[in-house]
Image (cartoon, rainbow, N blue to C red):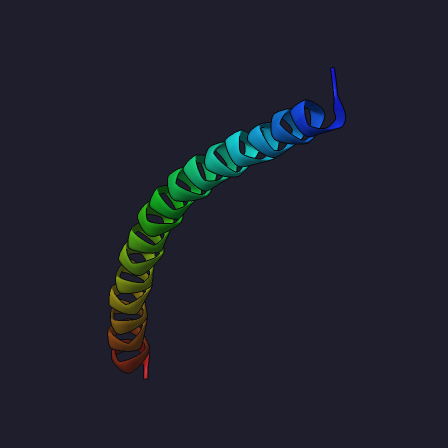
Length: 61
């Protein structure tokens, strides 16, 4: 194997790794988006619970 062939193989390998990492990043972006949705849902639930806590505080006062 000559130097040029070796360089082509190495470059090809790096390109393939880059494509795989890009694919993995895209999957993690989708997971992050789903987790953000769940965080928002929990934030809304916490806000509702805070409203109920305030109502009970007013009843007890």
